Amino acid sequence: MRAVDLIEKKKQGNAHTAEELRFLIDGFTKGEIPDYQMSAWAMAVCFNGMTAEETALLTQYMAESGDQVDLSGLKNTVDKHSTGGVGDKTTLIVAPLVASLGGTVAKMSGRGLGHTGGTVDKLESIPGYQTALSMEEFLNLSQKHGMVVAGQSGDLAPADKKLYALRDVTATVASVPLIASSIMSKKIAAGAKSIVLDVKCGSGAFMKTAEDAKILAEAMVEIGTACGRKMAALITNMDLPLGSAIGNALEVEEAIAVLQGQGPEDLKEVCIALAAQMLSLCRKWSLAQAEAKVKEALQSGAAYAKFEEWITAQSGDLNAFLQQRKVPCRSHRVVAKESGYITAMDAEQIGIAAMLLGAGRAKKEDAIDYAAGIRLLKKTGEQVQKGESIAELFTASAEDFEGAERCFLNALTVGAQPPKILPLILDRIGGADE
Ligand code: URA
Image (tube, rainbow, N blue to C red):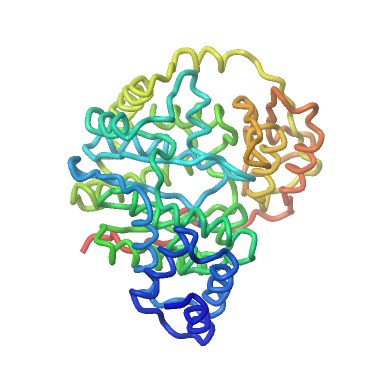
C-alpha cells in the first residue's frame, strides 16, 4: 500500500477500507508517512468528507495508537466532555455531583489556551491540588472516592496529537469527521463506558451555530456508539459566558456556591442537565428520576461533601483557598457607557479580556495569574443605566486594566429593546428515555 494512492483515493471522493485507514494511522504515528502526505490527505478529507463507518474506524485506530485507560474494574464509569466555552466550570460541579450519586468519574482534563479556560488550571488555583498523577494513583482515587480529575497521564491517542498539530498549521481543522474523530479518540482511550458531550454553540464556541453544533454532536454520538459506549450529547448556548465568573479562582468560588445550593441560575441549569444525563446513562435511571436525585444532592449538601472529599484526596487545601480569596486583589469596575438593554455579549471577546488580565494563556508557555478574571454584574437581557457598574475586573499581574476594559466593552451591545433570549439547552442527541 502507498500513501500517495490513498490521498488520490480520498481526492476522488472514495471511501477507505479498514486496512487503508490502519495503514495511514499506524504509518503516520511511527513517522513512516511524512507530514506532507498526511496534510494532503487531511485536506482531501476536508473537501470530500468521510462516511460514518470510516470516521468510527479512524477514531478507533487513533485511540489504539497509544495508552488506553482500563476502567473495567470500576462500576458506573461516566465521562463528560465540553467542546470549550468561556466561564465553563461545569466539570468542577458535575463530577462531584455525579460521584455523590454512585457514578464513577475518572477524568483527565486539559489546560486552557486562548479565550477558553482549562479545568486543570482552575483546579491548580487551589493550593496543593495535585493534577499530575501516576496511572496507579489515578485508578486508586477513582476506586476510593468515585472520582478523580487529573491532567493527562500516559500517552493517550498520540496519533491524534500529531495529526491535530499538523491540521492546526495546514488549515485542515474545520472538518466534521476530523474534529469528531479527534475528540472521540481521546474519550475512547480514556476508558469510560458512558460519555456525555456538552457541545457548545455561539460566539464563544468552536461551532458558531446550533445547526453546526448538532452535526458535530451527531457525528460524535455515532462514533461513540460504534465503539461500544453509551452516548448522549447536549447542545448548549455559548453566546454569552456561563455563570458570572471568568477566571480560575473566581470560577472555583462560583462552583462552590452552586455545590452549596446557590450560584447563578444558568450555570445551575446546565450542570443539572449534564449530571442528570450522565447518571441516566451510567445508573440506568430515567432522566426525570436522575434530575430529582441531582437536585436533592445539591440541596442536602451531599454534592458539596463529595467536593470537599475529592479536593482533600488530591491534596488540595480548601481552607487555604478560601483564606486567599479574602485577600483583596487589584480590581476595577467597568461602567456602562450608555443606558439601555444589554442585547449581546460576545463570549469570545470576554474570554480574551480575561486572558489579558492574566487568567489565560496567549501562548502555551505563558504563566497563569489564578486571581485574575472578570465578575459579570450584568448579563444579556438586563437593563443598565449609563454609569452603572456592569463588571468587575481583577488582576495581580497585568500592568493596567486598559486593554482588558476596552476588549470587554467592545464585546457588549446595548440597545433600546430587550433581546430575545435563547434557551440554554438547545437540543439533545441520544440519551432521552425510551
Ligand atoms: N478539539 C480537538 O480535540 N480536536 C479537534 O479537531 C478540534 C477541537
